[in-house]
Image 1 (tube, each protein chain N blue to C red):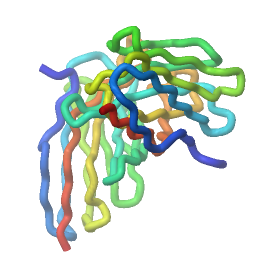
Image 2: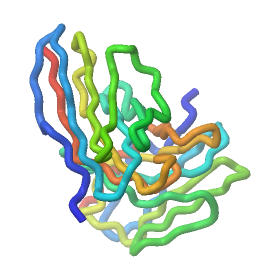
Image 3: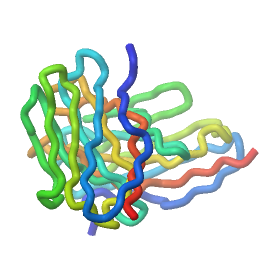
Length: 115
Length: 109
Protein backbone atom coordinates (compact mmCIF):
# COMPACT_ATOMS: atom_id res chain seq x y z
CA UNK A 1 0.00 0.00 0.00
CA UNK A 2 1.17 3.54 -0.66
CA UNK A 3 2.02 5.52 2.45
CA UNK A 4 0.59 8.80 3.65
CA UNK A 5 1.30 11.58 1.18
CA UNK A 6 1.36 15.31 1.84
CA UNK A 7 1.46 18.16 -0.61
CA UNK A 8 3.18 20.45 -1.03
CA UNK A 9 6.40 19.42 0.70
CA UNK A 10 7.75 22.94 1.00
CA UNK A 11 6.02 26.27 0.99
CA UNK A 12 7.07 29.88 1.45
CA UNK A 13 4.41 32.47 2.22
CA UNK A 14 4.31 36.01 3.53
CA UNK A 15 2.50 37.31 6.60
CA UNK A 16 -1.19 37.85 6.06
CA UNK A 17 -1.52 35.26 3.29
CA UNK A 18 -3.42 32.02 3.67
CA UNK A 19 -2.29 28.49 2.93
CA UNK A 20 -3.92 25.12 2.29
CA UNK A 21 -2.12 21.87 2.93
CA UNK A 22 -3.27 18.47 1.72
CA UNK A 23 -2.98 14.98 3.15
CA UNK A 24 -3.90 11.67 1.52
CA UNK A 25 -4.10 8.81 4.04
CA UNK A 26 -3.23 5.19 3.50
CA UNK A 27 -5.96 3.47 1.50
CA UNK A 28 -8.68 2.23 3.86
CA UNK A 29 -7.72 4.54 6.74
CA UNK A 30 -10.54 6.89 7.67
CA UNK A 31 -8.87 8.62 10.62
CA UNK A 32 -6.57 11.56 9.87
CA UNK A 33 -4.79 13.70 12.44
CA UNK A 34 -2.77 16.86 11.92
CA UNK A 35 0.18 18.04 14.00
CA UNK A 36 2.40 21.12 14.10
CA UNK A 37 6.07 20.79 14.98
CA UNK A 38 8.22 23.81 15.90
CA UNK A 39 11.62 23.99 17.61
CA UNK A 40 10.13 25.88 20.55
CA UNK A 41 6.88 23.98 21.18
CA UNK A 42 7.71 20.56 19.80
CA UNK A 43 4.87 18.46 18.40
CA UNK A 44 1.36 19.71 19.06
CA UNK A 45 -1.99 18.25 18.10
CA UNK A 46 -4.07 20.33 15.66
CA UNK A 47 -7.12 18.28 14.61
CA UNK A 48 -8.46 14.79 14.20
CA UNK A 49 -10.99 13.73 11.59
CA UNK A 50 -12.90 10.52 11.08
CA UNK A 51 -15.42 9.94 8.30
CA UNK A 52 -15.58 13.65 7.44
CA UNK A 53 -16.27 14.67 11.07
CA UNK A 54 -13.89 16.61 13.26
CA UNK A 55 -13.44 14.50 16.39
CA UNK A 56 -10.95 16.65 18.28
CA UNK A 57 -9.36 20.06 17.99
CA UNK A 58 -6.19 21.26 19.67
CA UNK A 59 -5.54 24.60 21.35
CA UNK A 60 -4.96 26.64 18.23
CA UNK A 61 -6.66 29.88 17.14
CA UNK A 62 -9.58 29.89 14.75
CA UNK A 63 -7.22 30.80 11.90
CA UNK A 64 -6.43 27.09 11.77
CA UNK A 65 -9.17 25.02 10.19
CA UNK A 66 -9.51 21.73 8.43
CA UNK A 67 -11.81 19.35 6.71
CA UNK A 68 -12.00 15.80 5.48
CA UNK A 69 -13.54 14.62 2.25
CA UNK A 70 -15.57 11.50 1.51
CA UNK A 71 -12.45 9.76 0.12
CA UNK A 72 -10.72 10.42 3.50
CA UNK A 73 -8.32 12.96 2.04
CA UNK A 74 -7.91 15.90 4.37
CA UNK A 75 -6.93 19.52 4.05
CA UNK A 76 -5.93 22.08 6.61
CA UNK A 77 -6.05 25.80 6.08
CA UNK A 78 -4.28 28.59 7.90
CA UNK A 79 -5.56 32.09 7.26
CA UNK A 80 -3.83 35.39 7.97
CA UNK A 81 -0.44 33.76 8.38
CA UNK A 82 1.87 34.92 11.17
CA UNK A 83 5.63 34.44 11.49
CA UNK A 84 5.01 31.98 14.31
CA UNK A 85 3.12 29.67 11.97
CA UNK A 86 6.42 28.66 10.39
CA UNK A 87 6.63 24.98 11.19
CA UNK A 88 6.62 21.43 9.95
CA UNK A 89 3.01 20.30 9.52
CA UNK A 90 2.53 16.56 9.74
CA UNK A 91 -0.48 14.46 9.11
CA UNK A 92 -0.99 10.88 10.20
CA UNK A 93 -3.58 8.30 9.35
CA UNK A 94 -4.79 5.42 11.46
CA UNK A 95 -6.96 2.36 10.81
CA UNK A 96 -8.89 2.92 14.05
CA UNK A 97 -11.76 5.39 14.53
CA UNK A 98 -9.92 6.99 17.46
CA UNK A 99 -6.61 7.85 15.80
CA UNK A 100 -4.51 8.17 18.93
CA UNK A 101 -5.64 4.74 20.12
CA UNK A 102 -4.23 3.03 17.05
CA UNK A 103 -0.89 2.98 15.29
CA UNK A 104 -0.29 6.28 13.55
CA UNK A 105 1.25 6.33 10.08
CA UNK A 106 2.89 9.68 9.42
CA UNK A 107 3.34 11.52 6.18
CA UNK A 108 6.62 13.26 5.28
CA UNK A 109 5.28 16.65 6.33
CA UNK A 110 4.92 20.07 4.76
CA UNK A 111 7.57 22.57 5.79
CA UNK A 112 6.00 26.04 5.86
CA UNK A 113 8.09 29.18 6.09
CA UNK A 114 6.31 32.48 6.70
CA UNK A 115 8.29 35.61 5.85
CA UNK B 1 4.87 20.72 34.46
CA UNK B 2 4.40 18.99 31.12
CA UNK B 3 1.92 16.15 30.96
CA UNK B 4 4.57 14.00 29.28
CA UNK B 5 8.17 14.14 30.43
CA UNK B 6 11.07 12.35 28.78
CA UNK B 7 14.58 11.72 30.02
CA UNK B 8 17.27 12.18 29.11
CA UNK B 9 16.90 15.04 26.63
CA UNK B 10 20.17 14.10 24.95
CA UNK B 11 22.02 10.82 24.94
CA UNK B 12 25.33 9.87 23.35
CA UNK B 13 26.36 6.24 23.23
CA UNK B 14 29.02 4.05 21.70
CA UNK B 15 28.01 1.43 19.16
CA UNK B 16 26.94 -1.75 20.89
CA UNK B 17 25.77 -0.13 24.12
CA UNK B 18 22.40 -0.82 25.73
CA UNK B 19 20.23 2.31 25.73
CA UNK B 20 17.23 3.28 27.84
CA UNK B 21 14.93 6.25 27.28
CA UNK B 22 12.29 7.02 29.88
CA UNK B 23 8.85 8.58 29.66
CA UNK B 24 6.62 9.65 32.56
CA UNK B 25 3.11 11.01 32.22
CA UNK B 26 0.63 12.57 34.59
CA UNK B 27 -2.76 11.80 33.02
CA UNK B 28 -4.86 8.70 32.55
CA UNK B 29 -4.14 7.19 29.18
CA UNK B 30 -5.61 4.69 26.77
CA UNK B 31 -2.38 4.19 24.82
CA UNK B 32 1.26 5.25 24.76
CA UNK B 33 3.27 5.61 21.57
CA UNK B 34 6.99 5.56 20.90
CA UNK B 35 7.97 7.39 17.72
CA UNK B 36 11.27 7.81 15.89
CA UNK B 37 12.13 10.94 13.93
CA UNK B 38 15.15 11.12 11.65
CA UNK B 39 16.75 14.34 10.36
CA UNK B 40 14.54 15.68 7.61
CA UNK B 41 11.44 15.22 9.69
CA UNK B 42 9.96 11.84 8.82
CA UNK B 43 8.31 10.13 11.81
CA UNK B 44 7.94 6.39 12.18
CA UNK B 45 5.77 4.70 14.77
CA UNK B 46 7.84 2.16 16.72
CA UNK B 47 5.34 0.91 19.29
CA UNK B 48 1.88 1.47 20.64
CA UNK B 49 1.35 0.12 24.16
CA UNK B 50 -1.51 -0.04 26.59
CA UNK B 51 0.05 -2.56 28.96
CA UNK B 52 3.04 -4.84 29.44
CA UNK B 53 5.91 -5.13 27.02
CA UNK B 54 6.50 -5.27 23.28
CA UNK B 55 9.61 -6.26 21.32
CA UNK B 56 10.59 -5.63 17.74
CA UNK B 57 14.06 -6.62 16.69
CA UNK B 58 16.55 -4.80 18.95
CA UNK B 59 13.87 -2.51 20.38
CA UNK B 60 11.87 -3.22 23.51
CA UNK B 61 9.15 -1.02 25.02
CA UNK B 62 7.60 -1.46 28.44
CA UNK B 63 4.86 0.35 30.29
CA UNK B 64 3.81 0.42 33.94
CA UNK B 65 0.30 1.84 34.07
CA UNK B 66 0.22 2.11 37.89
CA UNK B 67 3.45 4.12 37.97
CA UNK B 68 2.58 6.08 34.79
CA UNK B 69 5.95 5.27 33.29
CA UNK B 70 7.28 3.74 30.10
CA UNK B 71 10.75 2.87 28.87
CA UNK B 72 12.21 2.30 25.42
CA UNK B 73 15.27 0.07 25.31
CA UNK B 74 17.65 -0.40 22.39
CA UNK B 75 19.99 -3.37 22.59
CA UNK B 76 23.29 -3.50 20.67
CA UNK B 77 22.89 0.10 19.51
CA UNK B 78 24.07 1.07 16.04
CA UNK B 79 24.85 4.45 14.43
CA UNK B 80 21.71 4.10 12.30
CA UNK B 81 19.70 4.26 15.55
CA UNK B 82 20.73 7.94 15.82
CA UNK B 83 17.47 9.89 15.78
CA UNK B 84 15.02 11.71 18.02
CA UNK B 85 12.78 9.37 20.01
CA UNK B 86 9.42 10.79 21.05
CA UNK B 87 6.94 9.50 23.59
CA UNK B 88 3.27 10.38 23.09
CA UNK B 89 0.13 9.52 25.05
CA UNK B 90 -3.52 9.27 24.08
CA UNK B 91 -5.62 10.32 27.07
CA UNK B 92 -8.53 8.19 28.22
CA UNK B 93 -10.83 11.16 27.71
CA UNK B 94 -10.13 11.22 23.99
CA UNK B 95 -7.76 10.07 21.31
CA UNK B 96 -5.64 13.17 20.73
CA UNK B 97 -1.92 12.69 21.28
CA UNK B 98 0.16 14.70 23.74
CA UNK B 99 3.88 14.54 23.06
CA UNK B 100 7.04 14.60 25.10
CA UNK B 101 9.88 16.87 24.08
CA UNK B 102 11.88 14.04 22.58
CA UNK B 103 15.25 12.46 23.27
CA UNK B 104 18.08 13.12 20.82
CA UNK B 105 20.11 9.91 20.57
CA UNK B 106 23.52 9.85 18.93
CA UNK B 107 25.32 6.53 18.54
CA UNK B 108 28.97 6.82 17.63
CA UNK B 109 30.83 4.07 15.75
